[in-house]
Image (cartoon, rainbow, N blue to C red; front, side, top):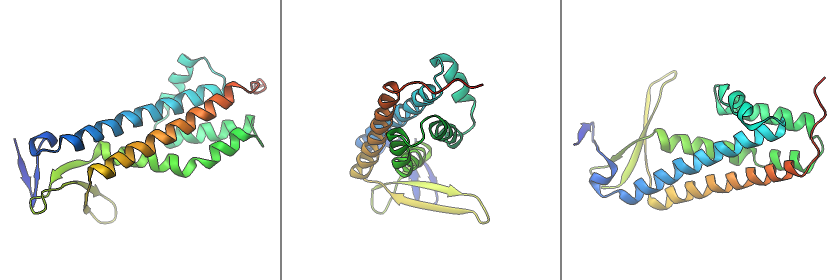
Length: 173
């Protein structure tokens, strides 16, 4: 079933022969879930909390920015001047981009451009002025995003491994 909205044709991705696109969109969303899981694990390790309790606190935060700020504060407090802090600081830009790209892909409205027959998404910004943007996404571009997210997850896992090998932070008094 298709709906027309302006010059784009909105439909299920596989209706238009975009199954490979759909596969990579799914991989991006899955890799994004892995990235979030790595952040959750890192949070529990930084604060040396039992995993179940850590999950309650982690998911009570309203935004991934809050979660990352908490992790940053903990690492700076408990592991200053360490390889852990250096590694955490080194991935901040790529972590931010990975989260933003995952969110963009996951929340996009996908459509076929009737002229080019290529897949594109529409993103809408509401602010001072309503703005509609469209951008073409090839399978290669989606695969690159999926790979970037997976690489950041791997770097988070390396930091978690470093934390496991360090002595716990002093008790909070």
